[in-house]
Each structure stands twice: as structure tokens, then as C-alpha cells.
Image (cartoon, rainbow, N blue to C red):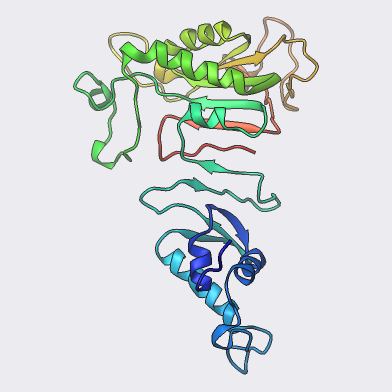
Length: 295
């Protein structure tokens, strides 16, 4: 690689990713003449262990940060990405987690699933519901008591006429991305759950469960029961048979022990969902400003 003129040139030409400050120092030392203009001298008498060239590296990072192209995410660690107007990839780093444990990508769900480095244990997705949002046929303005001007934009819906083809395509991509005994969990409105299950079975997945997520505040309606506001449906499918020893199902410690046909106070009429905790998980959403994660 030919030498670059300055430390700022090296920093600007980095690929998107996460770098420690020591890694940036090493790259700059290898790709440019850091000794020019007294680069190896201390910047001031008060900082005898520092160097002018290292200060130039940190100054270049500050310039990228001011333009939204770099973000400091921890002591000595910087996450580099695209601009704030067109983000490419974000890195979510939590206390106690390694740098590669969490990753945020702004990407088409099918491209994301096809580009995973290894098969996924779990794919969790909340796809569009085909509700005609943004069109005259949408009932959102009529049934939701809210100021629509304050709703954050970015939701991308799918035309109802193309919804079946859309569903079969992304479900097939999810099925192909799973390891054997890996699981797919899909959050939908009740009206789309049947299509998701059918598409998943056509892609070779096995039905595990359909979970009705309880909501206390169902919307009052006068024409029909408000099913879509009373529950959301989580359809769980797996690759391979239910009996596969690698399929994960962790029973919650507080799950009540009752006899068949009986209920206990706080859980009466409520669906209980046990976690299917993954090691490697891909999550996709309908909104391009929401996050998708892989770990």
C-alpha cells in the first residue's frame, strides 16, 4: 500500500468498523510518515509521554466525530460508520460485552440474512403488516387517537396485493439462515399469522407455537372485536423436528405449576411464553430507522 500524506488521510480512508486507539496509531505508523514536522516530539512539556503525531490522529478523529462519521463508544475505542444522513452500520456495545457481540445494520432483511457469517440460532422479526399506511385506505388516522404529525417517519409498508410474495421471500431467506434446530419467531397481527406459518412450513420449517401476546388496553370498537389491539401474535417455527436435541426452550422459573384446565390468579387467560434464548440472533424490523442485531 502506498504511503498516505497525513494521519488524517489514514483515518479518512478506514473502512467502517470499530477500532481501538492503539489500532489507529498502528495503522497510521505503518501508512504515513508520522515523524514529519517533529512528529515524535512531545506536544508540550506537560505531556512528555505523548507525541505530536498521535495528537494529529486524535484531532482527525475529532473532525470525523464533528461530521457524524465517527463516534466514541468507550475509552480508547471509536466506532466508524457512514454519515448521519446515510448511516451504513452501527455498533452496539454493552457493559461486559465484547466488541463483536452486538452489531446494528441498516440493511434489507433478505440481504442481511443472506450475509450472515454463520447460521443463526434465532431469527426474530417484526415485518410490515400490509395495513396500507400512508394511503387513503389506511384507517390509522381514524382509529388512533394521536397527533399524526408527531409520529416518527420511516415505516415502510408492503402493498396487500404483494404481501404473499413478500412473505414467502423473506421467510425462505430466514429459513435458509437458520442452523439445524434454529428457530424463527415472527411478530404479526393476527390477520397475517396464518400466512407466515404457511410460508414457513412451505420453506421446510416446523411449527413450534403461536403465542398470543396479551394487552390490557384493547381499543374500543363498535363494528367487530378489536382483536388486533387485544393481541399480537408471535409465531415460532424451527428448522428440523421439535425433538431435535439442539432446539432451545428454557422454561421460566416463575411459570406456575397447575393442573390441566385450571388457572392461577395473575395468569388467568394470559399466554405464557418461555424464552428461546439464542447465542447468535438476527433481528429485523419493517422500519429502516429501527435496528437489526446480530450477535
